[in-house]
Image (tube, rainbow, N blue to C red):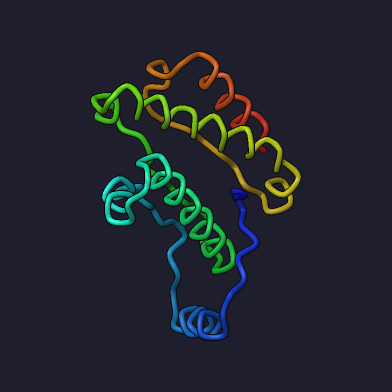
Length: 145
């Protein structure tokens, strides 16, 4: 999956977007809280990490929708200090998923530059493994302009 998805809209989604756009003011900034991926995985009888991965895929769709709607800024709350209280396997899986997605982000730098995407990561990054901190720093530097 890509960070800026090539989402294909259905006719009714296109209609809904046109109605929303014509209805007045759209927010400049929206925020998403990544929550419920484990519950989703349990309901679907899939591994927890697959639930997290599907959650990311849906976030990528949401980012595309925001881009197409003209939302200028998006914040995402994706990982909490509380997440470190989960099992070691799940934390490792989440950190590996982050590595995978931030590596993919760097591979898509041309698309990010085309759309004017800037990534800023906030929080206590020192709690993360050094290699992931480095990867996140690369992403922020690559998109800072």
